[in-house]
Length: 305
Image (cartoon, rainbow, N blue to C red; front, side, top):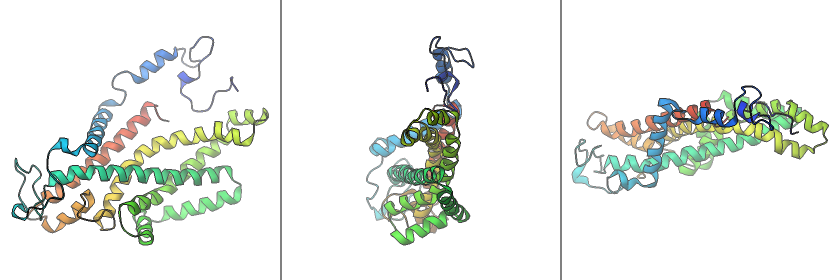
């Protein structure tokens, strides 16, 4: 096995043990690694996206750093005030500070996006591995299930799950996770089937390795690592869909600060207080875009394949 290179490994990982150089490029592993990781590997867009995501994480963990008071504090006398030095994002119909609520809503959006992606990825991995390693019957069953799921709009699938489980933040995470699982299942299924036909697996079979060891050592790593890269892109999508569920009133219930719910609350006041919907909407767009751009940049660098 030591002389067999696994498929799709980077060139600097396939090096001659006696010389420490890549057989393809002739470069030492140090030079290849420094070329990959030297300054600006993410590119300008990726670097900006990473900064935005880092800022969102800080806001989710330490919201007090960004000013504002209690996001649930009600001040009727200050209702519907325009943005000012006192309230940079204005106030809502109950006099609550919109900036405080937008900052506090960062945690909910990040948690829902990450958990929903983990749920969808976990279910998709299980289905994909079963389809890829099982016989024709299991492959056909999983294939038909994923095809039916793909034929339905993602939001409709999420709403069906919500109808069964009931509204709330946890059901919203599960709904988005179930709705996105078929996409991960199809990816994993194709990767597993490709890994099964690879030279390294065929060699392991000839050498008498047990099926369980072959699956754990060779098939699963080749199939799961690319899913990590896809998952980074899925977080942004999950944030958008979770906000859509809250906008429809089946996600995080009021008065908890959540961007989708804040958008829904601001619909009535679009003419008189547009800032109630503008700033939560911008937060959704900026964070979802930043996570997606960062995921693409990380995938492009080859750090996660």
